[in-house]
Every structure is written in structure tokens, then in C-alpha cells.
Length: 600
Image 1 (tube, one colour):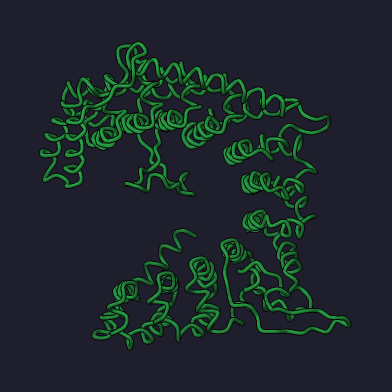
Image 2 (tube, one colour):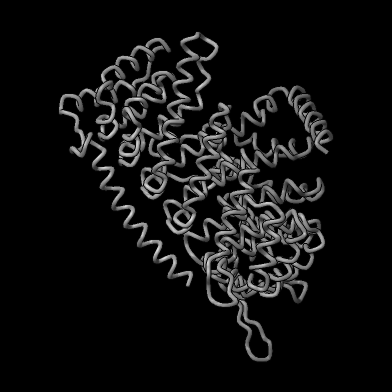
């Protein structure tokens, strides 16, 4: 039943989209005329402007005069410029340099007398970027308020224009949400109205999505009117929740709203989460099957549920588990799509006792999850277990069993390379068990590290009892240890192991690494590890590191990575003025100890 409802909704959406596109085409040229185009001379002018922007400016006055002159050329044809390939790139860059008053003037013209032009521009492949740039400038709305009375009026104009855009978006919510370009304008507007913006990447990097984008938000002060605009926008969105749940493009906008509200408006976020979950669970499905299980396995629905779990409070998570997911976690953890929201559920439940119930249920099929290849679920369980000491021993034992290095105990010393490569003992060491339990062993595979293996070891390093892991680290041969230290993923894991070790344990590791300090210093990833080791080392350990490095001065100083190590460690001073070097290191050590005592 649920699938039929979704299919019907998609057919309805397609019809609305076609109608929207016809409406946009009609609005683009004042009464249904064709899209305005720039003449050849104007396009050439904007190409020259683009070249001038790349050259930069002598000072602020030079920049201000240039921006004002170019915007005067834009005046009267802002819509055509915004929807032109060359003109839009220039206008987008100019808006970031313009004053709030100038941005407001451009928005006035882009919207027309009634604001109806906003929809056509925002849903255009070029105009959408210009609209985004213009709306983003609202974070500078206070720049001129303390300068002059006219400045205050200008700031108010920019605020009013953003409100005007917001009003048009509310009236045409589905048109914006379902359009591939308009949806980005909607998402930028949500960020601005909430008072936080993602950092804008330069140039071609804008197309690359940062996996950690949530941590890249920049907060700024907003006028009171923006709070109310955000609430009204959220209310209109919820009126069309069926579209935002089923449409991929619209669903991304809904997730943006949840993200910014979770950061800036937690009460509104709580209300939205409750309403969305209420809608999802109200849909009909097969008898005895929760509709949430259908959404967990859906590409669009799974992303939405991931975001809801991340932004949910204890009560909602507990209700979802009790009424919909209890006894269903294992099938979901094995599913190629549903395992992702399960990871988010594990992470979100970590601070609460609910985690223990989820943990116990998933432990019943621990090896099955690994066999299915959904190793990120296991990694998330380990990362969450860092906060639950009472489950750490059980989980570590199950890991040893899953990698076939639990019994006999002598095999446990091989666990680290198995964890890092996510290979069982038999596969890694090329062993075969024949009849009569005889074992034929060939040479092991080359030491390797995978992304999830590195995350697993970093999490295990946070367990209270990590002697098994440290014993395995001490057992590595120098060649494997160097590979470990210079690997893009492995270097992070080794850094955690070394820095969390006791002074005595760290000393044993460093003694084994003494002959590879120069190789580490000349490696992109090894140099970063060596610097982290240096920061956690005692003065005597630092001295031994310096003793090993200074004989290779001719190799280190010209190297692009090692030269930073040379400067950071003060090795020139170590060579010529060891007394001063020791005094500097002693002072640093005292500072680190003081800050550590304060934090503790």
C-alpha cells in the first residue's frame, strides 16, 4: 500500500513539475516572451570584467569604484545578466564584493515589481547561482548600521529583500523544492534565515561535497524577522511533507532544514522531527510491518531517517526503537541501504541506555554483519562502546573470534594487522587447515590498511583494556611498522596508539622506530605522525628523536615535508646551542602539563 502511495505521489509530482516549468518559461520574459539574452558586445564586456576580477585590486577604494561601475552596467538588465553563462559568473563574484545596499538593489531588480521574477531566475541553471550568492550576503546585513543613517536604511533594504525572497519561496514552495537549481536557493535561504552558513569553497571546489560539512558552519547574527521567516517557511514545508519525503531533490532541502534547526533552533527541530516521524509512521504498509522499515530500505527515505536520528532527542529515539525497530535491527543491519540509518541510530543513542539494548540485539548477529560486508556498522558499535566500559570486553572478544585469532591465545598477538586490513587470520597469513587439524603456513600478505580498519583500531585504542592491541603493535616488524606509519589511513591509527600509550609503552614503540625517523620526516603522512609523537613525547624521548635526525641534515632541510619537521623541532638550535634548546623544551613541557592539569 505504501509503495502504491509513493508511486501515485511521484506521478502527481511530475505533473506539478511540468506545470511549474511552463509557468517559469512564461514568467521569464514578462508575459510569456522568450528568455532575455545579452548581445555580443555585452558578453565581451563581462569577459573583460572577469579577467579584471582575477587580477585583484590595489585597495578597498579601487575595489569599491570597480564594483560600482560594473553594477551600473548591470542595472536595467540584471535578469538577463543573471541568466547568461558569462554574466552570471561575474555577477555572482561581484555580489560577494558589493555592499549590502548594492546587493539589495540587485535583488530588487531580479524580483521585479511583485517578486514573481525570483522564481524564474532561481530555477535557471545560471540564475540559481546568482540568487544563492545574493541571499548569502545577508550575513553582512549589519555592516553599515553604525556608519550613517543612510547605511541603516540600506541594511533594512537588504533584510526586506531577503524577506521578499522568502515570501516568494513560500508561495512557490514545491516549484523551488523540486527544481534542481531552485532547491539550492531554498537550502541557502534556510541557512541564512537560521543564522548559519556553510563555508564557501573557492573555485571548482564548490562542486566537491565535504563529508564533514556539518562542522563547517559559520554562525552570524540575524534580525528578529529572520526567526519568524524560518518558522513560517518550516510550516509551509510541513504542509507539503508528502512531497518532501518522496522527492529526492526536495528531501535534500528538508534535511538542510533539520540540520540548521538542530544547530540554531532546537525546539523547532524537535517539533519538525516529531511531525515528520508522525507522518512516516501513519502511512499504511503490509499488516504487522512498520512503514518505517520501508523507508529505511529506500534510497531517499534512508537519508532522511539518518538525519532525523542525528537530530533527535532521547524520547523520540526510544519511541522509534520500541514501536518500530525492536527485533528488526539485524535484518536492517544486513541490508545494503538500511544499514546506514542503523549506523546513525547507534551513534545517536550512544549517550543513552537505549544503546545497550541496540548493542545487545546487534551482537546476536555480529559475524553475519561482517560477512555481509557492512563493516561500518561494526565500526560504529566499537566507536560507541568507548563510552560504555561494561561492554568493551565482550565486544573485543567477539572481534577476536570474528577474525579467527581468539584461540589459542598465542594468535592474539596478530590481531592488529588483521583489524587494520579487515582480513581473517587464514586469509591474511595464507593458512589452510587440512584433515587432522594440521596447518600449512605460507608467507603472509603484504601489510595493508583500509579506511574502516583504521577507524576500528582508533576506536579500540580508546578502550580501557588495550593490552592485546599494544602487544600486537610491539610484535610488528620494522618494515610493517614503517608501512603502517606512512599509510594515509594507518598513520592516524598509529598516532592514536602512540599518543594514548603510557610513557613506558611509548618509549618501547619509539625505540623500535628509531631507525625510521628520517623516512617518516620525508613522508607526507609520516611527518604528520612524527610531529604528533613529538608533541606527546617526554624531553628525553625528544632528545633521542633529535639525535637520530640531525646527522641527516643535508637530506632533511631540502625536503618539502622534512624541512617543517626541522624547524618545528628546533634542530638548528639543537645542533649549535643545546642548552637553549633544552631550556625551550623544558618550558614547553611545563606549559603542556599545566594545560593538561587544567583540562583534567
